[in-house]
Amino acid sequence: MPFQPLDPLLHAELRLAVMSLLISAEEAEFTYIKEQTGATAGNLSVQVDKLSEAGYIEVEKTFKGKRPCTICRITDNGIKAFETYVKALRGYLKVSRK
Image (tube, rainbow, N blue to C red; front, side, top):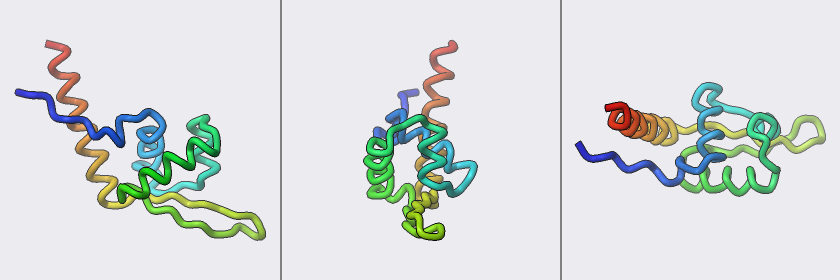
């Protein structure tokens, strides 16, 4: 059985971390994701933009009082992509244990 290709967009560590957080939480504030991943705001912003452009997450910019608040939500497309990625990765792990 050949290896299934791994989605290069999800194979990057920070993007995978963002998707992993959102797969269970469905949505999270940018600041929470930044704290959980240890990423810089600039790097996280770039990676969030890439996930958003791919349709894997939606980004909503609002305000909490007078402070800006960015909320990231996983999309149905993002859930499917994540599940496909995990399934493909499991295929790699099965082969390596034989």
